[in-house]
Length: 365
Image 1 (cartoon, one colour):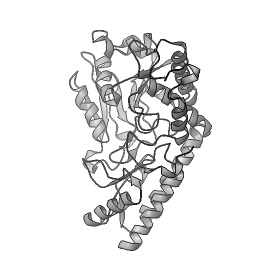
Image 2 (tube, rainbow, N blue to C red):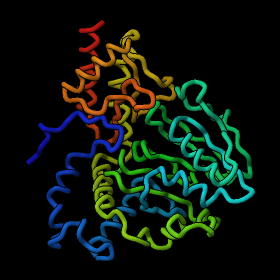
Image 3 (tube, helix red, strand yellow):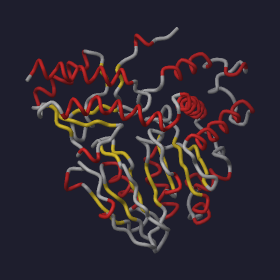
Image 4 (tube, rainbow, N blue to C red):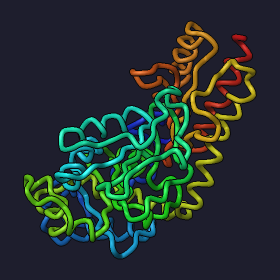
């Protein structure tokens, strides 16, 4: 039985909304997967049933995201936060520099971790503008002998997103795509490494996807702990140790759902429609609502804004909660409001928020 009528208007920033039909399928298969008499969580990760789930998820991601043949897809753990460490540990070798583009808190954290392994530098930053925008491509400065250039493709806290990516030539471009992966088509061949925590657009928390060009694996540092080597996981098809099996199963089901939506072009079109519903309310509110991001850098995934004054903002968030909206508080570091409209958030949920915002303004201006 569908539980649609009991579902919250879920704008959580992560872990975030999952497609209802995926949750319902998982519910049906939870205690007896594929006639095995076991849950996917109970069976050996070396079994034929799990092996099929694992490899199908990899194949489906490669097809859906148009990943070229010269890339490996890895399923790891530790979230994007561990990748902040693994990337420099594997590639920021002695005598090398790396360039980081700062667009928010997560890129700052990535840079901080890299400093433990070498001398990374800022390639560009929008910090002076309170991270309201993505730096212009011609403002990004890096060195031809850098180990890599790192960026965060979407910034959940500040609500900004890269529309176009820099061409770094022979220097590998590394992207943390945790919060907008699979929200639109991307030319994967522009990147040396793409990594993403699953808990926004890919599935539940616990899985980290890494897409890495094979030639980089040959250049990676070997004098580091086994579990922190990309080659360890590439050589074992991400089965060196027990993987997060249920999370990978769920990721595979979410990928099927994305396919059923019409693929990434259709998903992007729907995401643009959802974001426009809310941005249009902000833009037509005569300053009652104030967006944080500059229009050319606005995120389709995280819509950040403030209400006219602090007391009204508290009232807005309280009344929104009463009306069934979840997760609209801005990140604790910046406050304000944030609507995270990831792939699985329905158009109807964004329409409901837009209507609520208009009604709230009409009653309180």
